[in-house]
Image (cartoon, rainbow, N blue to C red; front, side, top):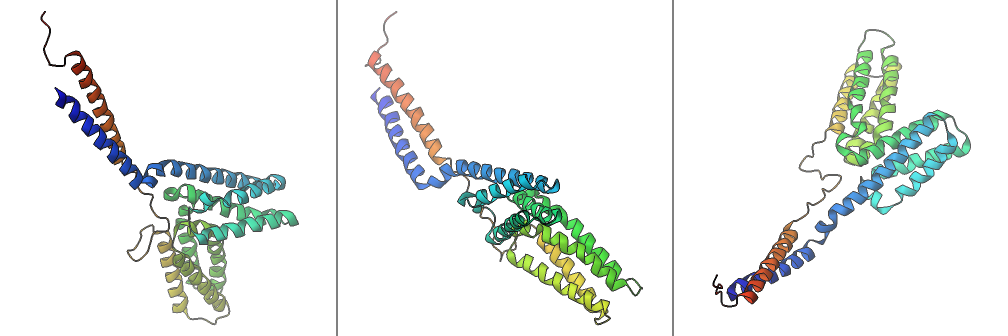
Length: 287
């Protein structure tokens, strides 16, 4: 009879010790979920404030805009917020905040801060919803820009280069709008490559307006630019590239399993002890 008490008691002690050991071995995993939820709430506040700023910019409500840009600046200085994304994206965010603040203080026109507000909103959305970010929808738009550039450049008229350069202006604006958001999620070299090829294409088209470039040079440059766009929006991670944001480790349930087992063993020990106290020799009373 005593074995029914001793064995569960022994297992209870062993499981309790193992549970404590596992908790010490994986402390970050046990608190990871709570910390992740807290960080997401901060990002949600950031995104809501950015949306309010964009609405204020769209309606040219300067008083509300100044209030929201101050709130954004305060939120962005929190360490938990800065752990998301990467440094290049936050640098562009800081520049956008500074641009809006300057515009509102100096009475610039609405478009000067509407574009910056849109850029900020796309960036906060990318931080909060990385897999379904709004900026990813610009891939089709930017490829259509390049299609118009290529079509204009290759048409058999004297103003082909002028029309192509005008079409490139739309591409330039779209890249400027998504650059900060892309910098939060993509390696810096991809964005640098795209920007460099965009500038080179602009130079060739401007030279073409003066008849100072070759057809194949510009054709190849537009083709390379299209390749860079596809590469920017490609979410695949080559083996030689590290992910922008390290994945959050999954919680280890070992300590909880051991703790649950310890509780069960404690209940069995107590039950066995009560039975032993009532019937110490296991003799049933006569009916």
